[in-house]
Length: 248
Figure (cartoon, rainbow, N blue to C red):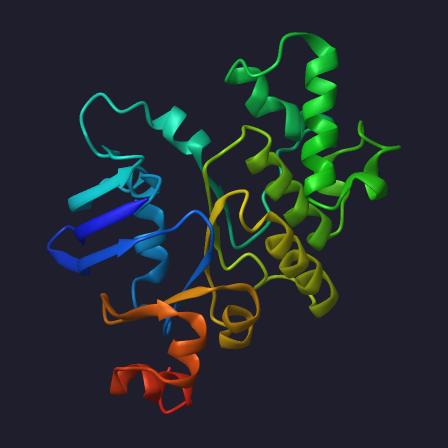
């Protein structure tokens, strides 16, 4: 994906100001910055989640495989299958574990018959590191799982439709340290199969899971580069001030 000079407005208020970034397939990209800096707002532009907010307006261009995702005629349902989203709070459907995973492949016509659907469900749960924990209770409700399991279920649900990009908006902020470690291990395992973008308040997490980091402040992207460079040798004073705890 690539974004060129993207600005986001809520009514007259400019929340994002002229952000340009290329998001590579082969890396995990982290968005960091203080609360209210625009990182989650920008993340939501990448699969048009801001369309759900009546006052929101996006300017600039965001391309997926060279096609502008904001062009007229873009099938937004199809876009959100190609660019999956995992939210801050786990949000499994109030359905069985099996139905949580099979729902997307069914509506997108990715499986012919139950055998193919079964295979997709198993493969997705295996990739999410959840299969061994739930394989004997696939008909139990997804909401009966622990918080960390629910979040992995949501990741399995996102990858079941074979996306190109996975967006994660603070996926560990509601989880305990053990569940957080499992999600981070999962991100490392998925790295390279999908372009992954994670918004996180934890600079330690960004340093652990990402290879590229973008620092946002007051609606602007201040700096973007290799994670190791951002944390050890930033080019901008504002980045240095944030990562050393002078503000945020």
